[in-house]
Length: 302
Image (cartoon, rainbow, N blue to C red; front, side, top):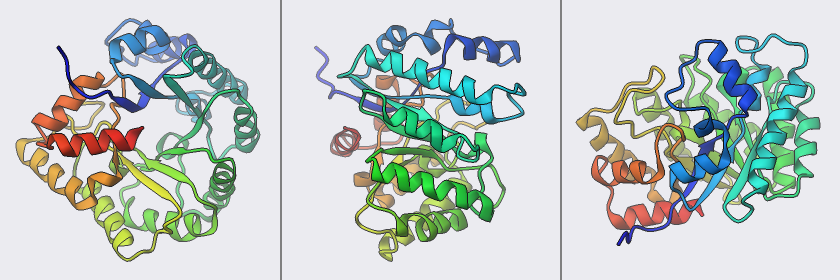
């Protein structure tokens, strides 16, 4: 009998059939049949989590390296509609996180449209795919009202913060705190992949060091719930150019989890990268987290 605790996976991707076909046409490899990326029944059955936050990926249509068409907003809408339809099939198991590109003129329009959907919901932004740099005043000016609106609507935010700039890290976190979080109502913010783009390296450590410093200095307003999503961090295999962790890396990751505090960590797989129980076992066996620490992380995720 499996006595493992139930898992709420906070980072599960879904793509429409159209998006899968477009990526395949670009030569992006897929290791499984399209249903594993696009069909909600297949995703839930294969993933094995009890509940999930289902993440839309329509923001890619705002990236000219991926899409050059003139109907980017319409394609984003279609992707968010596809996400909504999938989530509605399992209202007790699935919470959709609708995607926007915060730099586009239609970003707030689409966010308001998605807020009216009849499901519990959240907001996903991907600063790397959208080319967002908070160090650029014009970018900050566009991101700030989106955070405020999400807070006012009590929308949790999942943020892929890393933008691949070589100097990304402490300065960006300080701008987020000083120029956004200080001035908005209480918000639940989940920072994906421990702040970077997967794996665990010097860049991740610098970001976490600064985050810990800000918490200890009480610079982050206590009204906010700030979580750190561990999805795609404890890699035991190479993934999209990100190198798997060594034994020493896994040990160092455990030290950083404890330094940050397991009370600030949430569980996620970055599906289709991992199945739920597979990644749970990596955190226990390779990172070396105790059952009590894992239970805390799973409780945070609910």
